[in-house]
Image (cartoon, rainbow over all chains, first blue to last red):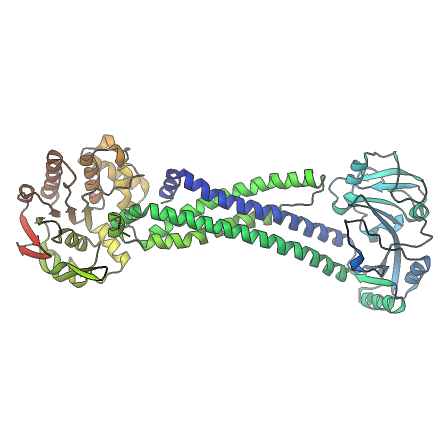
Length: 380
Length: 226
């Protein structure tokens, strides 16, 4: 009976197109918003996944309320040399890797880290587009793809790092492959060289600690916070919770907008399908008069909804790929932040179909209850 | 002697419009034998169409019992009635009642599709029936592209697709001119002669009614003459 449902859809083109448009807009909104959530979640998973799960981050205590303004406008105060030494000397600490971090341009970050310990920073597996790592003695840096393309530099060029205390030229020694996630936005240089440029005198913005064993993580964190009021220690678990909280807010927002879009689409589907049933009341009456049982009437209305939603949802997902690409290229300067995973695409199509089938239930029920004689005579 | 195909025992149909009750049928007792060609005559509002709708399982009586081949239909569910309409009865309406968006062949094949047959098989049989009613060349035309007489012939072909035992025709010539009306009655008469199907026709025309084996007259919801 699919052929009859298809025939009915093509007989009423305007009605079909309007219903399809409602589904299309809702699914496009859901996929486009969902892609940002998905992309951020993936970025966080990748970034945290590359760092050891038992790593402890230590930085100077700061007040969250001071962190107002655009990203990068607030700089956490550096720790002193003594603080770094104190952390390295703690029992249960296998490695202490100091990092000098400076943010610039809203989204970029300079990180000075010991080149022998970049594994703890989680960056050792990132592929190079050109060049390689500097040695600890080099006056050079590795740039993320977007950092290099924004500054318009290639390997062998020299740059002055933002926020430098001295006008020291830094040689570009390597550029990471495009699409390296958060590392697209960083400039990495040897710790000693960063210490010289930013005059931190052996201090650090952050120290990453590798414990001797995963069982001592909490103990190390507690010792730091008990013995030094100026320092905050954060375990990977704490960091994950904070990031989950932040993405949770975004997820709720996405869900909210998606819900409203779905509601509008569902009401649209109910109205058009209901109107369609009223318009076809005589036809439904004739079908019943010549022997259609209730299941067949129900089946035809639901088949119409199914076909309509499958086509509109697939189309919406295809168009969303284009939107997301535009969003990444135009608004985010090539960072692949928004991401449509197969799960998101498949889920959105399934959701579109389910939404339409559920919205078609009431109109279908009205059709099923049609009295053939009244419908044929045109009496309500 | 063939047995009864329809039996009505004290059948009443009462409509309630804005609190006022109207009896369209008042205690009808009627037996129609298998293979009979019956004409039902009567003025407008006498209950002819209501009687046809109840016998055609399109409506149920308010009171009384209706049997088709010995099975009581007055207590059947919507779906059971739909199956009886589909398999046992072919209904021909005054206003043809073809689906406007479907072609002649699609309209005719519809009841067969509803009984679970495929599109190809149903359309093959529909084409044979179109040939019998002389409309093969119009099979891909939609109702609004056909004359009233052609539409009624398509409706008769549709009523025959599931090879029902009974054809109920509610004023089938009511919307047609005299000549076309006669052609439709000729078609029904030849159908009766060739297939021996039970045929009941509601008509105002006494000349057309005279062609039937039996005449039933209705006045004010009563069968007054047999």
